[in-house]
Structure formats: structure tokens, C-alpha cells
Image 1 (cartoon, each protein chain N blue to C red):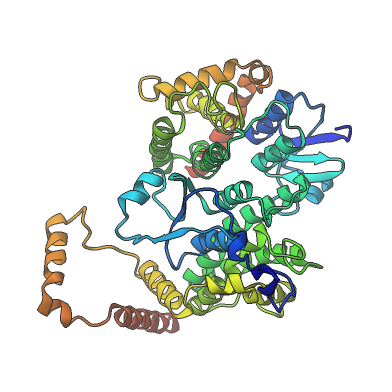
Image 2: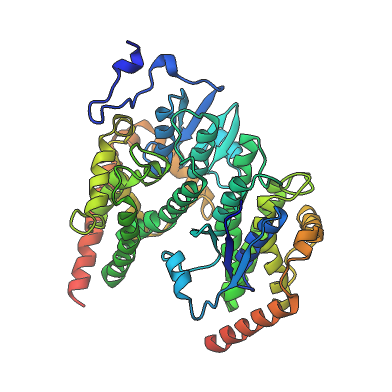
Length: 223
Length: 298
């Protein structure tokens, strides 16, 4: 594919990283455009009038929005290094977990990031329940969700768990404990060791400061 | 002339039915569904459009079967597609699976970019339009106005998408039409029960025209649940939400709950009970009367 690929993202966003990982795993050259969400560019609003959000992938001038929809597109356009199984049934299972990650895991992550007091306690409890579901049903005894190599489901959960991990430090609460979630814990460790992932993570201290700053503002406004 | 050639739909002059000699077989297919569920009808539409034979299993959602719980242990919801006894869940994902396995009459666009666009709008509609509409139906007063406005903003995006097209899938119905197929029938009932109009011919003429075209397609029409039953279901749901409480449940009062089950099975007791449907309608009406009285006194 010789047409230009651009990715509009934000450095602190798990969604941006999902797309970056997919592009890098497939060795696709792209230009990265950092967006300022507090002052959204006219271009971003033009590309994503519905949600006004990142990431947006622009390929040959055509915008695609929603991180996992973007990755499905990337998967079809650049089939080398497949991120989904070829078997139809296994693909349906993979897509199920991707949807679960976005519908359930992501929403609970958001609540652990952006709530305080009783709401936060509730969110933490729910988070553990979600992790339990994935531990019990999602991974089975595979090295990665996608089998021997990482794929879309790993990317979907990996982004969430990385941010959850950073938030654990901010909150001073351990959620993904190895004795409670042995499979998930082992998987997450392996996931972060994959070279493309390891080399493409945001600066952890920066994310901590960013999240701490947000939490301070949140707590100040709720007192 | 083959049976297929004979079965031509007069409306579009194109073949909508798949004749028996064209029925594709890729192993046993079952659908676990609920008659009134808009998410389940999508699946039946897709299978029928592709001429796939299937066995339909009606699920009682108040008394979930072991087959449902085993097939969908995470969510315990319908629809479930069972193919060679392998369960596939989540209605939009089931559509994708069906499209991949049975390649005749493709539902999703072939072009990857158009496919991404179709997926985007189906996701958007399921997240914003379905629940936005139902939320607006359930809400009251100022909240209802706000919710309706927000829902209509979402529908406005769909209006733009149908511009210049017969169907969201182009000349023929496709994945996105099936995903939005709840609008002509289910939304219509929601609006009646919730006492508001979200998609009308004035605000969204193109969307309205699409609903008329879509609902006339024979395969679509034949799978629609009876309107009356939908009205009753949404009315009951609304009143449950409005009443919004469970006083005697199996968890809090197991012995009492067990007694209710025993009592209601006694023949003489059972035969004197008024029709549940009529009771629901009565309480719904009473509730809204009381609330309107309250509102007029504020």
C-alpha cells in the first residue's frame, strides 16, 4: 500500500496505542499527528464529526474512527502478520472478547479513573468481577488470547490493563493480583515483553503524573 | 424456469427469496431467541436472506434454560447462534459470522473502507439510538425532553447516511439495514408506549422513506413479531421501570417466593386470576394518571 497513512492520536490514550501497536506489528509506515483534545482541531472535527474523538486513521485521505474498527480495517488492508484467527468460529470468539473489552472492561476502567468515594469502591469491585470473567472464560490455557502470537484481543485487553496498572499506582490499590488472576497476570507479563509493545508504551511516569493530576482535580471538586 | 426465477419479488423486480434448490447447507444451525427481541430478529433476517435453514428455539428469559446459560455463560442473553453446536453470541457479531460462513448474498460491503463505515454506524446505532430512544421513552418531564433531543441528534446522523440511497446497503438491503431494522417496527411501538415521536416524516424524511421501503421487503415483513405483543411488552417494561421496584424476590424472601409458586399452581386459584396483561395495562394507566395529577399540582 503506497497511499499515505496518518494516525491522529493523543499520547495518554490507550485507544491511540492500540492502533499504534497494530500498525507497528504489521510494519506499516505512518505519520503520527498529536491532537489536543482541550482544543480540538478543525481537521479532527471534520474527520470524526460524530464523536469528535481520537484515534482516527486516515488512509489515502479517508478517515476511519473507533480503535477496534480501525484495527479490523488495518487487518483487511494489510493481511500479513494476521491479528485475527482465520477460522470463522475462532474469529467470532475473538470479536466477542473485543466487544467485551470495550463494553465492560473499558467502562469499568474509566470509572476507576474518574470517580471517588463510594462510586470508586463500586467501580473497583466491578473491575475485579470483570477480571474474574476474563480469567475464567477468556484466556483458557493459551499463551495469548490469539494463540502463540498476539492479536486483536490481546491489543484490546492489553491497552486497558496497562492503564489499569498505572492507575493501581495512583490509587494505591492492587487489582490484577497474581494469586487471584494467575492466567491473566502471566499473560499480561508476556504481552508487555513483546518487542513491539515494549518499545511502544507511553512514558509510565508521565502517565502517572497525568492521572494523579486528574485525580487531584477530581477530589478537589468533590469536597 | 427455476423456482428461484419464479419467486421474483414484484416490488423490486429482484429476487428476494432463495428457492429450495439454492438453500445452502454448512451444517446444523440453531437460533436461540426471544420472539419480541429486536436483536434476535436481525439474525433470522440474515439467515433467511441467505437461504440458510435453521431451527428456532424460543427462550423464556424469566426462566433461562441450561442451553442458553451454557452457550452464553458470560452474558446469559439472546440471541445465540449455534452452528455445529458452537455458540456465537452478540447479534452484530453473529451477522458477521453468518456473512463469513455463507458467502451468497453478502451483507457487509466488500470494500474494506465501506465495511468499516458500516460497522461504525451499526455500533453507533446500537449504543446511541436504541438505548437513547428507550431512555427517552422511559423518562419524564424535563428529562424526557432532554433525552428526546439527544436521541434525535443521533437519528439525524442516520438521516445523512441514507441520503441518495435506497437502502443503507445500497441497491439492496445489507448489514446496516438489518442492524437498523428495529426502527420501522420496534421504535414505532416504543414511541407509542413512551408517548413521543423521535423519527417522523417531517424531521427525518429520508429515514422515514427508508423505513417504508425496508418494512415492505417480504423476508423482513414475515419475521416481525405481532405489533400488539410488542406494545404489551414495552408497556409492561415501562411500568416495571416506572414502578421500578422488586419487593418479593427469591433472594430476599426465598420461602415466601416458594409459597407464591405453590399457591399460584393450585387449580382453583389459577382459574380465578385476571389476565396479567390487563392488570399491567390497568396499573400502568393508574400510575400515569397519579403522576399527571401530581405534576399538575406542582
